[in-house]
Length: 174
Image (cartoon, rainbow, N blue to C red; front, side, top):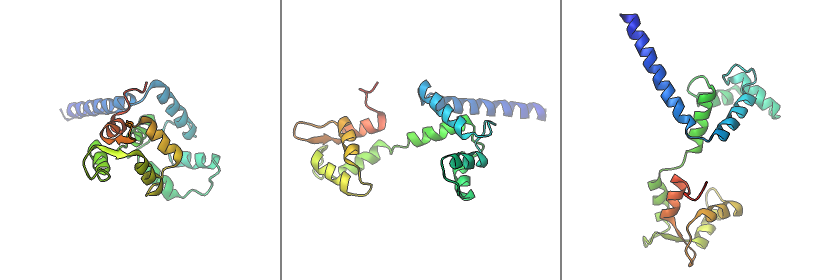
């Protein structure tokens, strides 16, 4: 009886793991998954299907960084919360790539620059802030953002629409 229960629990855990891992594959296009697979293969130096400390050390060595501390490598491995196989590797990248703040957080930040609650911020003033404050944007980064931003003829950015684009993607992209 106990062994049947343990078997059922193992099957349920396997199904949960399969569901969780299958979701990560839906986050990326097939070509992206192939690129991640190639990157994983480059890092998995001993070809055992798991990225370990020795794999990371050897990869760093190939990139010219010879004196990597064990603590640094262990911190990297901790992000996987267990052995880093390809599915975990892909999940880590998915989490990093989708690490955008929630829409309401971004809106709240924009509202600080819109004291009259118009829903707009001036493009030139905003550009000045982006290039001179905190994590300074380069001219190229600002221009990339403005290429997606809904800007009216008066030079004002519709920041509510921009927040939607940041958090949900630009529906014009294909």
